Amino acid sequence: MKAPTIAEALARPHNAFSAVRLALAGAVVVSHAYSVTTGDASAEPLARATGFTLGEHAVNGFFAISGFLVTMSFDRRGARDYVLARTLRILPGLVAATLLVALLLGGAMSVLPLSEYLREAELWRFIRGTLTTFKSNAALPGVFPDNPYRSPLGTVWTLKYEVLCYLGVLVAGGLGLFRRPTAVLLLTIGFAVALLVADATHAELPKGIETSLRLPLIFSGGAALYLWRGRLRLRTLPLLVLALACALAQGTALYRTLLFLAEAYGALWLCLAPFLARAAFDPPADLSYGTYLYGWPIQQSLHALWPAASATLLLGPALLLTALVAAVSWYAVEAPALRLKARALGRRTLNTIEPAGP
Image: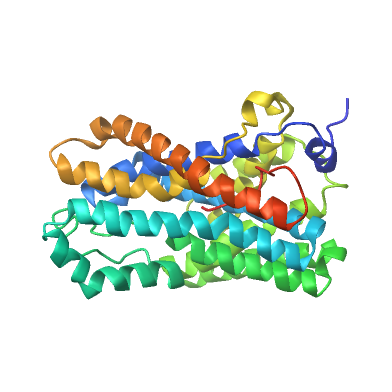
């Protein structure tokens, strides 16, 4: 029996996009349990084994899924509806998280009196910087002064790259490149070659250069898989070959590029796998964005309150509290925004596989 094409797998009544994204968001929370308590991301076992933390691997999966779904969104909607859909999926949750963390959580956790805290210019710079430039390393006045990291919204930096990729889709779609899938495939190959060259010409590749090539490469890989969906079959063999190639290439300039391509294909293979094509893995509530946004400030708060507790001890309460807050975010902010989007686009139902985050 032939493996289905990606298009055939996508046409099934259910898929696992929401479930996989939630698992990836949870993986980010697990990964940050180490860095929040120690200040050293390399303390995580997976970082030592693969060169990347569990959180970085999860972000890679997010960007592959986002590239696939965002390209599909533009392809099905066109430019105007695409911009509206992307704005209403990302912005309301981010605004709510920024204000809640800055005003409510910050006011409660700051060592400053509340009246003094609210007068601090640093507070309002934090809000402005987070919402306009996705600044993730800014601190709030008197908040988390003894934590290894003082930033209360440490994960929003990826949204900068996400938005840039969204703009790239808008430009590529406007130029008609999606009608020529080979062009997007060549773009993906171009990012891969650029990463290979950067890796080969640096004794130690700077993190900023790596990130600026890694995330667009993975995103464009997801976009290419969508555009070639009618021709490519959802096979396991390419994933196994890429995984073996990664293992053999570790320590060489090929390793990063092969790893990122393997993770891009693997994330989408998992989302469309037939054994996950069930209603149970396609829930009506998409808690991944809220989990991604609120996991870090909750973990920062728990560590500030119980600084002697280990990463393992705080992980369970962090996951539970994050899930509860993510549910509130979904039902109070994100789902109403999606309903507004549906009304604006002349539809009656929500599309919960709309990507948000990482």
